[in-house]
Figure 1 (cartoon, rainbow, N blue to C red):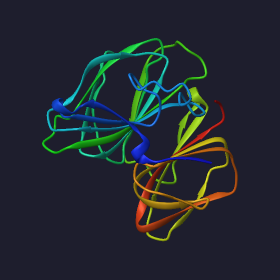
Figure 2: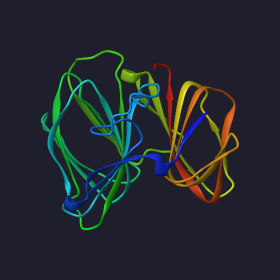
Figure 3: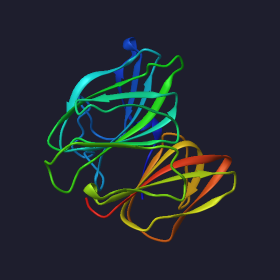
Figure 4: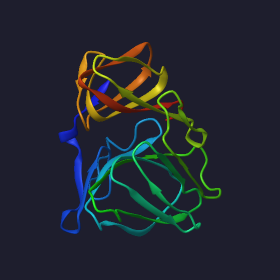
Length: 219
């Protein structure tokens, strides 16, 4: 298990424009040839947007983009005609496939924080696709067959234990709170990269925790 701490993330964004970004993997000007991906995960970015701030229209291709809002509301618009508000508890997926352009903004009156994860598809190309699952339940994994991956959301009360999926590649990101995983304490923004994960469990500490876990078969 390889633990990456929140303070090791690359800082990006444009603070003067109300955008603060923390990158877990090599990203943009923060090139790190030893940290390009884990399993299918290419990026795990924590984004903070001030009211009125956002990312103007920009392109993506050959990437599965999954977004988890922590607080606030995310406005999404894309070149295929989709427009939506994504709120805490919703899972948003944009399959950029052969190419798509989109806008991400905080059009609300309170700060917006979200975690965005990029995964590599098994096959490039195809047609873009978009969906939002509103209020996903802890017991309902979100399948991403295009990347041979499954997202599990865990919201744990203090002291609660949860089984961690067995997987060839397992990526665990702590959204909030603290957990004990295989002897390591993980706090907000920390992540664990586990190869050939088997028979692991996470235990919430303190006031509980919220976790995002990617179960992946390909890398």
